[in-house]
Length: 200
Image 1 (cartoon, rainbow, N blue to C red):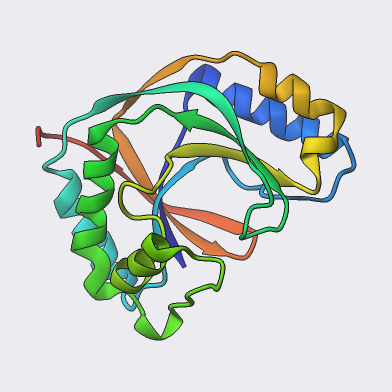
Image 2: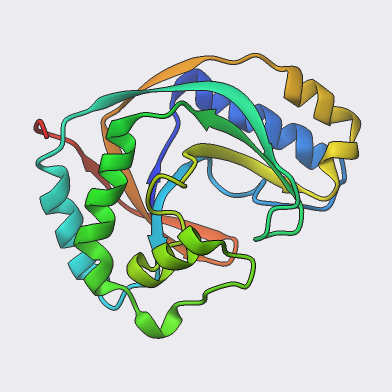
C-alpha cells in the first residue's frame, strides 16, 4: 500500500503531537496515534512503485504551492474503518487541494491493483464509486481533508472529549510538497518527498 501524504509543519505539527501524546497516556484503546502526522490525499495498492514515483515526479513539476487553513477540531463518531471515534483537525474547504487530489488519482488509477480492491458494506454510493474507479473511497467532493490525531474507543464519553471539542484552533500552512509513503499495517516509511515547482 502506498499513500500520498500532506505533512504538517511547525506549530500545527506540534499541536498534533501534543494530542497524540495525551491520548497515549490515557490508556484508552486506540488506533492511529503512533502514525506519523499527516493528511492522506490518496492511498491505494499499486502494481509498480517505480512508475508511481515517476508519475508523481512529472505531476509535481507542474504544480505551484498553495495555502491551506486548519480551522477547527472534529470527530468521526464510530469510524467505519476502526469502529472507534476518530479525532482530527479540519482543513478548510479549498478548491486547490481537491484539484490536487483529482490530478493524482486520474494519473495513477491505471496503476492500481484491481485484485486488491475491497468495497466495504459500510461504503455509501459515492465511496463505492470512488473505490471502483480510483482504488480509494474518498476521491471527490465527499472527501473531507483533515489531519488525524487518533481513533479512540468511545472517546465521546471520555473526559478529554470536551476539552478537544472546545479547543479553538487556526493554523495556516503553505503546501509546497507532498510525500509518498509505504504503509504496512501500522508501519509507515517515507519513500520520497516531491516538491512543487510551477503554476497550475
